[in-house]
Image (cartoon, rainbow, N blue to C red; front, side):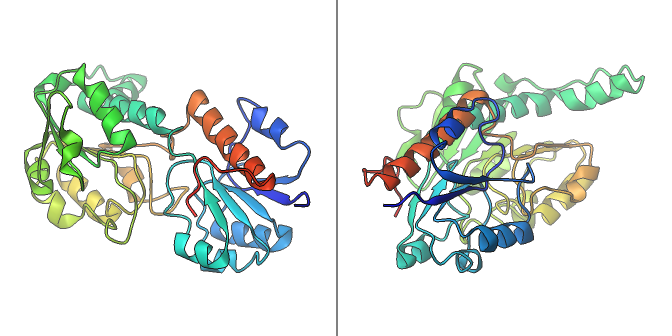
Length: 317
């Protein structure tokens, strides 16, 4: 095929390691020019203007409206693991190839999950802020070994979180997954129903994809049965937690905490920012040097394979 026009919409890209940029050097490539996640309007304007044949995408939403802007589009290569931003059935209908990099970010996300568990249990961020404001506040927190931890979703990331937790020896690890065999052969772990996790666990960490079924997976009903000092962690996707209901729960239960890395609208500028018991990160889960490198290189390699009519490693459709 002729050399296609490639549009890289994700950011950052090639920032710590320029290898993926070098891999694309011979192609007509248009990079993200705002150096942050595109707003919806920015994305639509640039798609219509650039008319790319191939997109190397981040978490921007490529719904039917967006894809209609680029009738010549042949491929979307996702830098990352989630596919909720890409309408797979519509891409199949339009004969648009979709690939992604499912393994590359998993360890980085799992590590940040453990980091936030420790941060929330000991209120590290809060005490740091107190100290900077002249307050010597020695918060009495919890240890992981005194906690019952619930892991909802035992895919690549959920399994890695459990593996890392095993060495910290929590009291018990409950696992909830579509496939209950996911908890088998994992020390200190046992299968549990969703409601048991919600009512019994000190820490609840969610690692499920965003789907219509999983929208508002945790909302007022679920929050109402949790422990009043529960630690909630969302390293998956915005929309899995109902943000309004979460804000209400945390406002009335100051001993509870929430560590959120994905939001309904990004960049996030909502009410959760006003609470002291939230620990918020800007979709940071995959942002380690190793993870980012393998995601970017993996996405580029899929593009080059596609251009050269070679078999794709992680083809979705």
